[in-house]
Length: 254
Image (cartoon, rainbow, N blue to C red; front, side, top):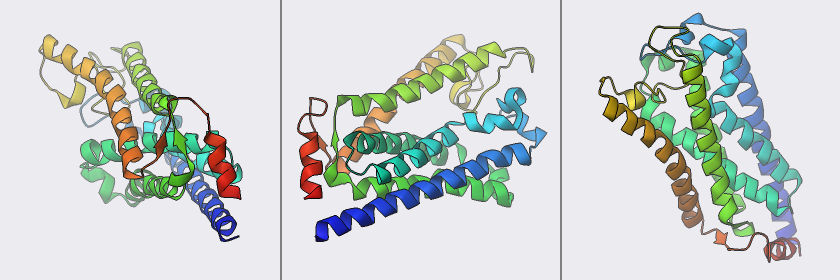
């Protein structure tokens, strides 16, 4: 009886977290459309941003918002479909993706003073890059004993990150020389295929190596984060996809 009550409480927590993440992400994504600032069309590095192409709607193409939307939707689904192992695996995948957002932002992008001098930008950054990811981390801890991860659970976040890097590359070369001479549109300053990782030199060899590293990092990092969460929360792993997975749900519901 106590176990059923606990599960019911966890379901409501997941649903509540998901609703908060989804609504705040929608608000801040639309804030780019409602209060559009043409200054956002130029990156601090001097490259045009994807907003120069998509205007305010480009906010929906930030990895930050994509990963926040994914987390919000999955939290709600996991709360509703409590016994569904796929929903729990999807939550693990979304947490790995939002971890990318959390780490990359605070390691590479949070230093910009303009973000913290503007109240809207400051709250937007704090919620989508800190509060929402932390809610995801907490949610994963709540279901850590009721989830089994498999090889595909680790593979999907890698595919998401890699596909996003490919999208950034296509955007860059499709807009090269069309907005600013000698530059292509970028989503993030470090994801610039002419000046990767903020490299300012003109050495072609270095640029090629750093561009290659963009792809390597996009594949390795989510895998490492997935492994990290598995060990932190001691999440079970099995080689076969869903074999015996339903047993955990049956035990938790009994």
